[in-house]
Length: 278
Length: 253
Image 1 (cartoon, each protein chain N blue to C red):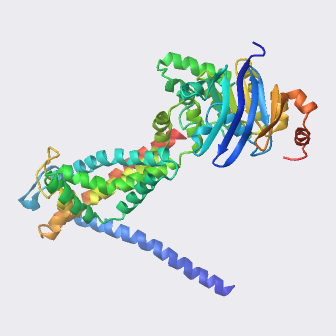
Image 2 (image 1 turned 120 degrees about the vertical axis):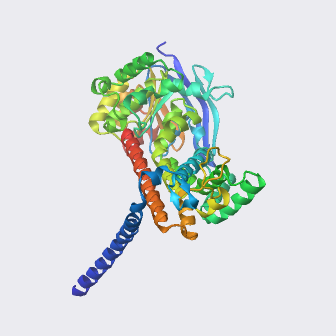
Image 3 (image 1 turned 135 degrees about the vertical axis):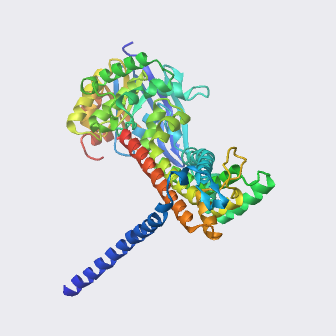
């Protein structure tokens, strides 16, 4: 009895410490970034374009580039990802060979390091298709990277929709497409949105693949054919080229804030949807 | 009209892969009557029900032979529009399954699918359907609240209202009361009695008392065969086949 009690206490302590460790790491990193970064943050830093390679001015163009690239990659990846998820779950119900191939492909894609996508994007979009370093090349590369996440999470969300919904809708005389569009998709929307949030996180944080495909121009991207530098790439360049640690932390601070804002709004829309369904 | 045969099935056979689930079923279902299908689990009664609105063909590896005539016209002909068929032959499933939307949108789902967009026309249909399903008094002032918040019994009546909204001629019910408490069940049975004035109802049930209470005709299924089919009174009081007698007296099943 005593021995058991003693073991129990040690185990509890170890688990508690591991949990504490996680909280401490997160708090440490975020705290450090806030402390080091907050001094650079002011309205000019957010609203002014960089000058002198980022030594002076703000980071406005990189914020715009980040949003531009993320949005474009979602516009490409979400319809394709959700579309293939619908195909796999609703139309290829039995495990036919093509469905298995698509599943295998998306699993394999998910495990490939981003720099490989970057290399592919550079060779294919930038050079072969002559799209150059541009928002378009970068967002297509990002789209390929996030496609597996979006497909997987959408697939899970769709397969979690009760089977009875389909029977009931079809028995009311709805076509398969009407059933998917009016019942299945609205019911699986929260899961699909979760996949989109994860993808946004990945897109905002990506550097290597984007340096190779979107370039690192500090100009304001207007057309999708313009090159662009995202905040993460900017952060990398500022540190790697020894331009300004202070500004690097300022940029890091804004990236963290941006991710938090995105998560907040995503959660808000999630709970709103969840509430409307209850 | 009293004895008009609404649905006639001839030599209906269904195979799931190699397994033969139904063996040559012949049945005449009369208009504006309640026909109950009884039998132990796996006897083919639900499979038979699903041949009447061609729902079996959604299950992969299913082979269907034989004929079903609705008002004398074969529903398995190549040029039959399944959507129109399912509009005429509605179905209520075992588990009350409301869509994750408001009560109003649930009932309006079918009409909208079939192209009705006019708001006041939809309002009218929703009200009429909910009234016919004995749900208007309880839910008439809560049309915009989510359907999933209703009780199981109310949900099943909402499902019936949803079916009524597409204005069917036949309503198939697959063990509609099996997930309901006794009070909800008796409300549902009462509703079935009212609905048969305007609709032809075919109900699958594992509950023999229920079959006896609600139906005019009863078919007894066993191992994929229709063993006996007769007026409900006759079948329960004077079964012709020994197996029917054994089943209704509780000797097996």
